[in-house]
Image 1 (tube, helix red, strand yellow):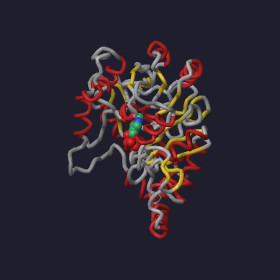
Image 2 (cartoon, rainbow, N blue to C red; image 1 turned 90 degrees about the vertical axis):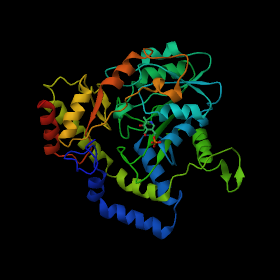
Image 3 (cartoon, helix red, strand yellow; image 1 turned 45 degrees about the vertical axis):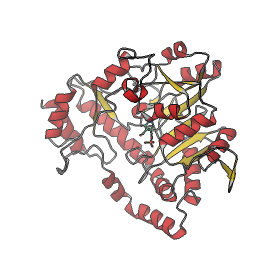
Image 4 (cartoon, rainbow, N blue to C red; image 1 turned 120 degrees about the horizontal axis):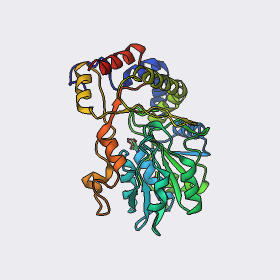
Length: 371
Ligand SMILES: Cc1ncc(COP(=O)(O)O)c(C=O)c1O
């Protein structure tokens, strides 16, 4: 990142620019909440749940206070608990794995496909044991995991499939929206996400009535009505303000996603003659480029060069989860998941947000060519 106090010439993302582009609508939505005083859940959250579920091709949406809470409740509603195993990938944000642990279950890793950074379906079957209850693919960086073989294994082996779609609002797999394919899908509305709140937020979408009912109770102290607690639940409710803001922003999401895709196409053209490994877009998928991660063996040098020119970059993620001290397990060590480990060493995220201009893209490209 550019050093503190220096305005970046190309920031990693620009939430302020986005706010200014829709300021009157956002300000009106906030005023509405202040006037109605529906600060927790309420009409705006309900409206957002319906609209986002429809957008994601699911019958129901249950809004919660973060993507992590969404994952936690999705696993609980699916009956995951102590003694169970859930298969996921180590090259993800730690929340995917933390949420499995919250239920008392054990995360079991399979490696990624190095071309897509998503779960390699060919590795799944070998990781299944009599304790396996679920598979949790991650649509990392905004690219859908290869869902058909994963869903086929889930059906055949009677395993729950939970999509971690925290980075993939509006992504599609063979024409089907992320969120419409599996038992439950979980989204994050953390501010920097493609659909970001002005605070924390998340949602589970599902077309399973029973799961939806359970999650609605669990997010609100396990109540089926006030002060009647059927389940030992949580305070995971979405704030009214976030629902109202997200409802406004959802109306702009398609346009923003198309802008991200256009920037990705432009990066592809501008950087084609460099030695960088550029993100592959799998045929038949709609990648929504939450993160534009290139691969390079010269990451430290490139980050330094870019930083000196006021171009912010990121690393998603520098340490795979199986090598994080908090998630150590005697079953794996360095070398267990070579593609995830190589990705952690080589990925470099370039600036990517809808409001980027041609000048921004050219500046990044010039800096990467100039070294
Ligand atoms: C892949 C992935 N899963 C889960 C999460 C958790 O979402 P949140 O930060 O809203 O809890 C995030 C985002 O931070 C994420 O990127």
